[in-house]
Amino acid sequence: MNERILVVEDEPALRDTLEWNLRHEGYPVKTAADGIAGLQAAREWKPDLLILDLMLPGMDGLEVCRQLRKDTNFPILMLTARESETDRVVGLEVGADDYITKPFHMRELLARVKAQLRRVRLIREEKTSLSTEETPLEEPIVCGDLTINPARGEVLRAGKALSLKPKEYELLLFFARHRGQMLSREQILQRVWGWEYTGDSRTVDVHVRWLREKIEPDPATPARLVTVRGGGYRFEG
Image (cartoon, rainbow, N blue to C red):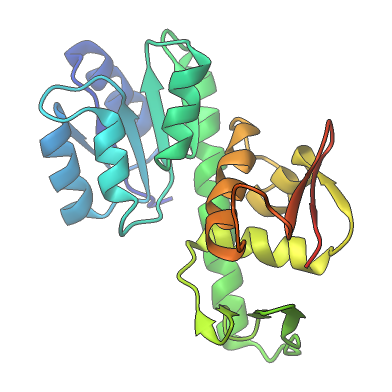
């Protein structure tokens, strides 16, 4: 086990406790006590996972997360003393992968860390397998003016390449492969985020909204990626 974890937490006792427990589990750990130092450490050290407090001096956790999501994809587990649904949703919207409210049991936090890192490991192994093995190339999927090319990992809209985050691409590909089917949030989480994902199902809604902004002619009235009331989503193509 060599996944590196960065802990950004301004409470010394909690920061030290997190560091001790994570090191006890075998993870290399670096810590920072404020948002600015945490942002710098994340960019220089390039951890495999970030544990990020929401309320930080210098720069709060939401802004740190927002800045990092411009050019990084490692999992971010956000810590907060707040319990409101608004804070949870905002955290997901700026790019957090999971959200845990203080006080929490260390066993629960470690379980979430392991689940996130296991997902990262599986993605890496899949990429390595695809690069070293001969696998049948999947044909491009054409949905109106959208062309999804799984072999190249790209999406074109009216011939122009779209800039999608990795999870947005995975989500769109999953929808396109199941065109016309109603997919529940639970199905989407299991297939796109992984069976052991422990985060909030609202992350699906957040990513769908981001995706609509890139593939819909009018994101406010989606015609391609439609909501099924009380159920989930359906991709009409």
